[in-house]
Image (cartoon, rainbow, N blue to C red):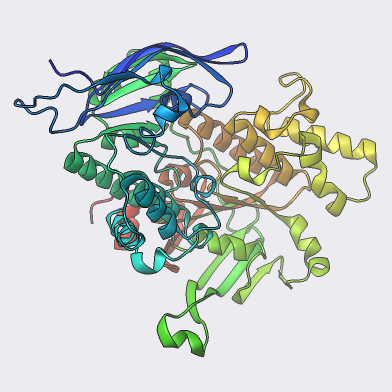
Length: 544
């Protein structure tokens, strides 16, 4: 009888006096694709991290039985029986050979997981040299091959770039390449497609499926995206507050959910609840022929003659009216975030871009009035909020610059009113003003980031993937908050996203970008109900 690759028995995980995983049990076979699904805080990520003791300060009990095996040991004529180890009982030294070699991770946030001081090729090659004993030349060649496998364009050139020079989706694929470097028996992918648009998401999942079949490895997918689960997994475990509430075949569980929590996850798609576009509304932001370029180093002797130029945005035209949302959608690397940075005056651009008829000057004092009108909410609030500042300091920081006329009492009143507007109150969070970002969940941190932007009373928010890192129910809550704020305050949103469901819920007008160019633009109804460009049809999942 073949033993499972992984047997989890009565696993319990506690931090201080709080138990976050409460006695879960399941098996995972070699060659199986298992999805662990649940909201933020359900315990799915800490469950996986506990297998190889990557949880600092955690108290872990129960059994995690690992039976080292591969396709050869499963053959009928195999003579050597695989050995079983309890990972909970292994020492740090004993786990060294298992981490990366047998069990590899693709973590959620690539900018945190990747070393910013090393090229991505060097980081992959380092794994190959240490774990597989390759020479530097062999490791570099294999690193490039792995980048080719993960679909990164110009892999030879990209191998010599640093993480910050890649798009979010490209960085995520570098992490996948690094995790696959040692051909692990178990690949644990923690939200591997969070930063990717729908077409690239499918490509990455197809790639993982192909490699899983080729090498016979097991894959544990940790995600809050049920569409990803449907596309990839064969079996699913649904977790709520540290317990498994439902499990079984993916098609059965997602088509006929029995537990109310599973039913709630499935029906958490954001509804469209926005005020109809006013054709006579004043134009707040307008761009004509907007171009953004980066200098790039030329290869060979051409590099001596000067740097080249990479055009990230090619002549974009758009306008955003008061109280409306312009949704910008496209694949990772399409130029949509670069467009947002130019709109914020954080990146030098050519062409015309005006806010209330005024252009960015590139000088702090002259641009100060515009900075109050246009604020930003970034994709990852944990990175954009300083961990050393408490809530009061974070939210009040902009007031010292944009509302110096307020006294201490007026500033405190503005802070409390703004926090209440985003659903953060002292009643629900005692000692709210003195709390730090790490004391909040992902959705609560995003509310805090929104409050930080709103406190200076802007006319417009640039929303750069504001919900991509959130689970389905938390995403729904944040989108409903943004809809409510737009109705009450008449805010305009420049919404950057790869998620079609977010566009459906929020946008009045839509602009589709591919490779830095605007391939289609129009009203929400025109683009989503009757797309014309083949690329738009691919993004929307419409048959060409």
